[in-house]
Image (cartoon, rainbow, N blue to C red; front, side, top):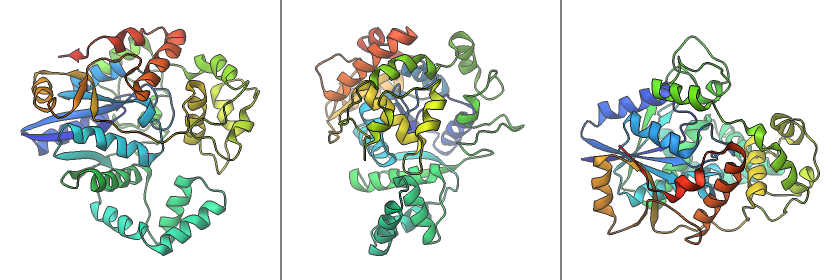
Length: 365
């Protein structure tokens, strides 16, 4: 049986994800699917529209056999760290293949970038673009374009998966499935039933674009509104911590005692070519949660959010080689302490009993 690893946020899970999952099952009929989800905050620093427990249930209903959590400590980070952490935890489950969505599905391009990245010419061009004040991501893509390589966001993230696999376990195979109809950051809705998560998050009626079980939860809970955190965010910036992650070149000074009407306005008045929206999002949440700018530590564990019978059997097979956490509490490690802190803050505003759910066992199907 082939062990398939999926890296997802399901923010929210939509018909494009369903298409992607069905393709996996077509390619690998005798397989077990391990999905790792970002926790309450996405890689780009956005508050996830549903909490991780709701998204875990969605993942299991889609067909995943085992669902892991990638804690905020790792997942809310730059693309390179995000990719590395997800591959690190999936490798603990002894996956054979990582399957990812792609704009191009061109694995040869990933080889080309890897060889180019290590050249002095590329390093010089990257440093030159960084010196012009571009964010790292924009400087990186502009440097690739200088060498006639055009790459979109999803494929750039796939490149970081590719690099992480080479470092962690080169025996893992990376398989790319071409996206259809819509770029994952497209904001406009067209006539197709497959739309980007970005565009779906802005809709009042999502029934055409998501599986029925997701729409049912949308009707029951609606999407979380980031603006409900505004007062806590304002409070956190009365005396911003200049030692938090993502702070650089006096970024904290831009936020000290800042006044804003809503979260979108906050991003609008602080965004520059050096500070991308993703970096600003991550900085705001890092300041709110007091995430220190320290080196990332990786430990021999996985955090389990949910499983079915196939997933349970896999856990029994691997638990002799890795510590399996089916619930968490304070004092285990820095990553889990941060999860608990996020629970407490989000529970104040959204009243979802996240702390209670984190202390309980995983979802079983």
